[in-house]
Amino acid sequence: MVYQYILHSPLESEISAKNRWEPVLKSLSGNEGIPLKEAGCFSEKEQLEKKLMTATEKPLAMVLVIASGGTERLAQTAATRAKCPVLLVCDHQKNSLAASIEIHAEIKKHQPVKLLYIKDREKARTEFNSFFRVIHALEQVNLSRIGIIGEPSHWLLTSDGLNGFGSFQTKLEKIPIRELLENFENIKDAETKRKLESIRKTYGKISVSDKSLSDSIKAYLAIKRIIEKYRLNAITIKCFDLLEHGFTACMAMSFLNDEGLTAGCEGDLHAVFSMIAGQHLGAGPVWMANPSSIDPEENTLTLAHCTIASNMLDNLQQADLTTHMESDISTAISGPLKKQEVTVFRSGGRFEEICAIKGLIIDTNMNNQQLCRTQAVIKSESPVSKWLEQTPGNHQVLVYGDIRPLLKSFCEFTGLKYNEPG
Image 1: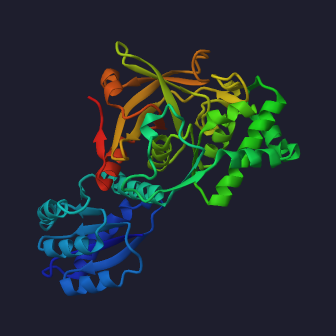
Image 2 (image 1 turned 45 degrees about the horizontal axis):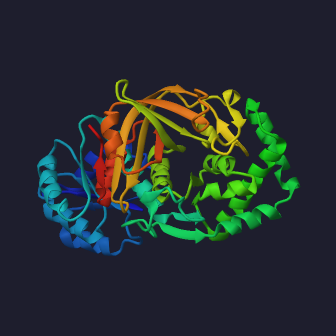
């Protein structure tokens, strides 16, 4: 819940303040899935404190509408009691801006705060709802229960020793790989039939056997049982441990991400954490991939991986279900991404930093047999040579669109360092 308070001077009537601001606020709000509680209009500290004490839920955030000057102490009282991110909304009338600058200078010493000055209504609407998008993403990250099936792959040095997610409330559930294998063995061929028929109708080319497809579906169903048992909304798996059993989790990861259940590879905790944040900040699917090459002269970065959510692909009739690259077994996806603007990022350290770049997909589906099956070349706005030195780890998360402003706010609200190589 986000609470909204209109604060005004005792020299202005409540009716006057409401008449000025309620139409403005109504035109701004889309809320991005977060309930907004209109708490009322206040000019007296005692009245405001009473209202604050009767709030039924701890606020995820607070919107303080600074209707006029003389409201500085009121805003300080509200922000201090809430101890959550604050959005200060102001305009050019009745010393609203002057008061907001004073309030912003004080509140930022103690908690996250954004100042929204309304001049252009459409631009203000975008910024207003971006605030709610970030709050929603932060809530989802903190509420997430991530299951790690097996341990992080031994080559992922940046996941060594991680048993939590820094200052975030995200929960980690450790699940032995044998539980997945036991579930896999208990799934009958008949359970895979409907999904198998759907796959045949969906993809333009299928270069693997029905057994490979069926085993991939069994892996998906086995992981779904784990998700339901442990009440998870995200998983990461030490997938290379499955190779000796004759299958991979590449298609399973794709199915899960299509369903909105964040699924990452190789037990990489930073990658799956970044995927959750990117999914909710970008309001759509995300892709976890390996950086395969850079070209400093062309300023491009090539990403590749053997799995991707099918709803991120541009044309499923141009996609091919083929084998996993390293092992040449099971089922992986080779398909074209959309040639559009993207953000590429990941978290690092003890979940204390995020490094991001913006780019444009200029080539995809190159069918390079030396790379993981789904491939894309991104023309970066940041120098890729500097990105190479500064990115905090291997796997990157790609999101369609430019979510850098949202990532910056996410970092500001959580105390992370935001880095954009330049």
